[in-house]
Image 1 (cartoon, rainbow, N blue to C red):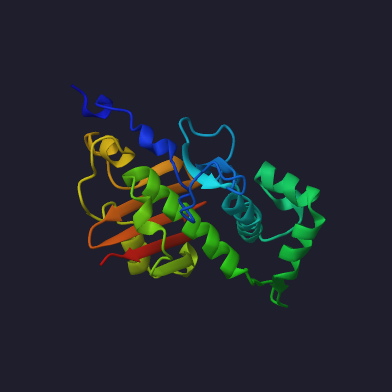
Image 2: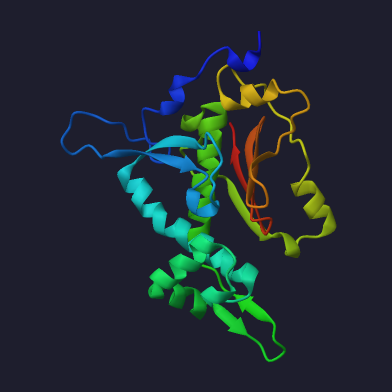
Length: 239
C-alpha cells in the first residue's frame, strides 16, 4: 500500500486560529474565521499551484496581515526591478496593484534613495515584513506537522536577508538540501512527502517564486526563499 494514501488528515481543516489561538464559539462576539492560503497568493503568479495549502485563521488576524503581505510583495518586486515605475515591473499583478494604489506606490517610492553614481538603496518597513514571514512560517509548520499550538508564541528569531548580501558559505548553508529532524506522524503533509523516494527537504511551491523547508528537532526551523531574492529563516526554540 502506498503510505501516501493511508489517510487524508481532516484535522488540517482546523478548529482554531493558528496565529492567536482563538476558537469559534456560539458567542455572538466570537470572531469570524477564514481559510487562508499558505503561501499567500500575492506572493505567487497565475496559474497557481494545485492543492495550495490552507490554514484556519480568524478574520482579525487575516485582515491585519493582508496589507502587510501586499506591501512585502510590491516592495520586493520594486527592489528586484530597481524601480517603482509600473512600466518596469515584470509581475503583472504587482504592476496592477501599484497602479491601483497610489498611496502604496508613494510609500515604496519614498523608501527608495538614488545616489549620484546610479546605485539605489531601499529602506524597508522591517516590522511589517517580519510579521508576514512569521505568519508564513507558522502556517507551514501547522500544515506540515499539525503542531500549531507549539508555534503560537513569538519565534525566538527571525532572519531576513537578500541572497546577494550573503557570503558563499551563508548561501550554501541556507540552501542545504536537508536540515534533519523528527519523523512526521502519519497523515500530515510532511509524512506524505517523506514517502516519496528521493524527496529532499526543500518544497518548491512555485519555481523561482516560492520554496520552503521545515525542520523539527531540538528546535523548529523554517526557511523560506521568496522570488530567489529574499532568504528568510524563522526559529522556535523548544524547551
